[in-house]
Length: 293
Length: 236
Ligand SMILES: Nc1ncnc2c1ncn2[C@@H]1O[C@H](COP(=O)(O)OP(=O)(O)OP(=O)(O)O)[C@@H](O)[C@H]1O
Ligand SMILES: [Mg+2]
Image (cartoon, rainbow over all chains, first blue to last red; front, side, top):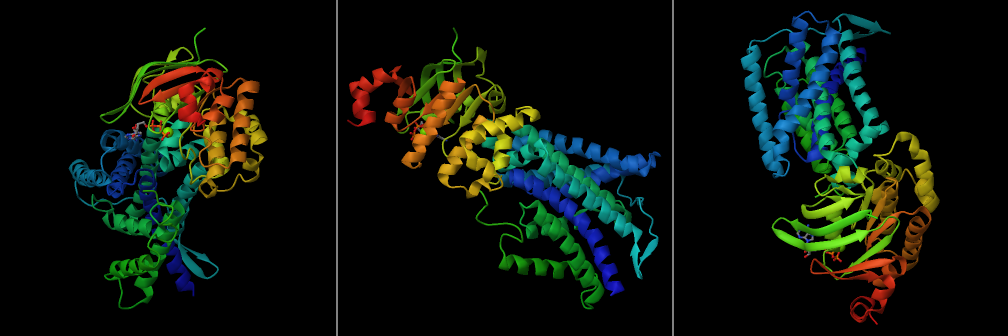
């Protein structure tokens, strides 16, 4: 039982990382119908920015906050410079642009920081702590707290502030939002900024365990895409729940189902997701009927 | 005196198709004006050019200021509220969120008073504030679109067939509310209406569009007496 709890908590930690990136994908898809394949690479670049700051002697938490701010600015710039020119193009074209961006950022990161693997510090010690007989890693608990904290902050922003309302309205119905005085273009740009912030969190949380290199976000992106689809692609809550579930599922599969081990974790997890999607084609939290055409 | 809204030589187009060929019209401060016309005459297009949602050419002045090149959100913030044809609400948001959205350009402290004012006309909106707008009936959505537009505290309210699909009694209610807003609060209204009888009862003046041009204009009384208006739009 103690071991099971440990596995669940450590699954929640990776799940929180998937959920952050999945949420970023959902935010942009909900607003623009575009699946941003570059979301992981944007996260990777921001993680390099954090590494550079830390490498120059800036404290971890200051670097963390600065990186989030820079990620926001970067996301806005990517929208204005790269995505906006294609806003009236078919969705497939915009998706191709994000794939181009993926390749560009990947190459750029290798060119600037070299593709040599770097160690990325963790804010939390790897020291285990004992809670009533169950041993958790402080690192896992910290990752859960940070990723869920940022996600909760974002939910609060969307739910309780005027800017959040405008962001949601602009995503759902740009025409009506404009008539209500909402500068829709600026809201879309801010949406890209927030997505980049979420990505930066996932990058900085995953980097200590997978190490920093230009390809580090690829598996995370795959899991996040799976979680986003499983959650319904337009549902932030769905992305969060699916991301956490996926993290836990993968961890339990690896730990308890012998034949699965580490090699078969991904295929088995994806098979389970496909089975769920066969039963619920719109995902756990999506609704086919509510989808606009 | 310059008019609140002044439109001169206005053209509006969809891609390469020009739907308006030089419209000239005006709405005075505190006035209620109707636009009549057959299907496809360009009534909806006229409102869209004023609110800035489609490409347009010509002079459009609001409160003496040229708004012909401003984007729709800037025009809205100047005080032009457009309740468009069909749905003018955000289906995914709740009733209350739609009203809050309508108040986007207003200072936060004005919200309570503005809401009270709208709720005085539509008490159900406050009671059912948590309901998702997409689950409202067609008529309720129409009213919510009007409520959303009023939350902007507009100087000019533009309505596009607010009576469409509503039960006759609800239509009477809706127009009574609009007339009250116009007469008691001095809100200028520009309304597009298929129901010419209704429009000419409420508005003081009207324009009749045909093929993207103003075919006729005059006071409601004049137009009611006009032979061709009577035959084409009033049906007697
Ligand atoms: N989105 C659009 N794209 C292309 N053409 C359009 C579009 N909307 C309207 N039109 C064309 O512009 C012309 C004027 O249309 P408009 O909607 O202004 O008419 P209307 O007077 O409002 O008619 P109705 O009473 O049927 O609502 C029509 O010929 C119509 O086909
Ligand atoms: Mg029309």
